[in-house]
Image (cartoon, rainbow, N blue to C red):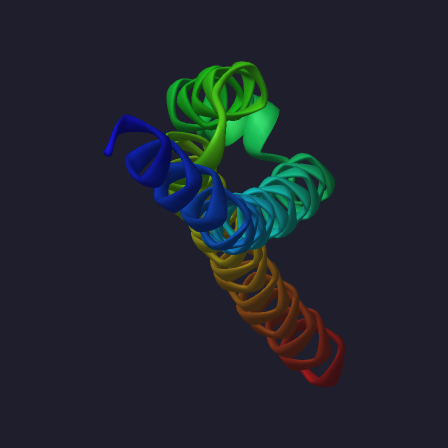
Length: 136
């Protein structure tokens, strides 16, 4: 009777091994897919940080830019879903830094435009006064 059980166990072993190999391969595929997604998010975060720097965020939003860089470093040190989450947060902080930089640039352009309008108005007024003085 013991020999019969041993044969049954050995006969089941190849099937069990095949099942374990299939499960391991499918698990490895999920891990790989998650890691690929994380790497894509990390690449997106890197581009967002680069864009924020180009926008001038180092001067206008240094805290947000620093937070984006910190979260990117955490993403690069992590694996899988944790890396993906840190990278997504890095992207959001970098995009916020870029938006702040863009807003500050728009405000600066508006200040410049207002100053130029005021200068033009002053110049027109002085020109008008000069013409009036010459015609007297």
